[in-house]
Image (cartoon, rainbow, N blue to C red):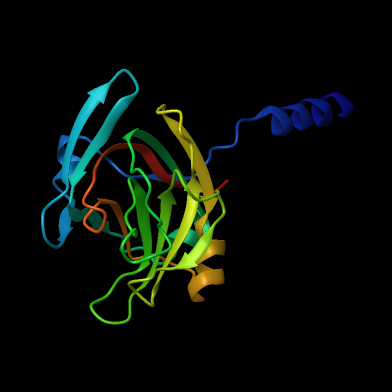
Length: 206
């Protein structure tokens, strides 16, 4: 009996725990689900594949367009409160102040929250070469939008960040869900050209 209890304990201790994930699919079929949204000159988004899987390249030159998908499951963040994002910035802005209207552009950002026609509550998880990671502000353009800097990596290499977005949405907007996810690279205010890449965007339980 003692041996049985010992082996059961070992089994429970060493059994792999299956993590919960909800991944954003950038393959050919997945890209068809994305809808474009923005104004003025368009940011160009293209997908491709390497040894590590699919990714999206964004090129913006005075553009302001995002691509996004709807998320119907309002319980998603209760089960998987973390958002994992992998960026690579090939060409970033020079000399802009992202706290102002004239400089409010981002080479790469992932947007979540409560998107609707009037009264949206948005959170932009952004890359910035100028602001520290953890910087948080209300958008100078939109009362219901918050910018949160999750990356200021200047290496030009792929880098990953994990953020408790449920906690952030509760802190910034007093909501605990998201009904969309979008990637948005824009340069319409600064009129500069940027090139950025996205991959491995997924919600997880830890």
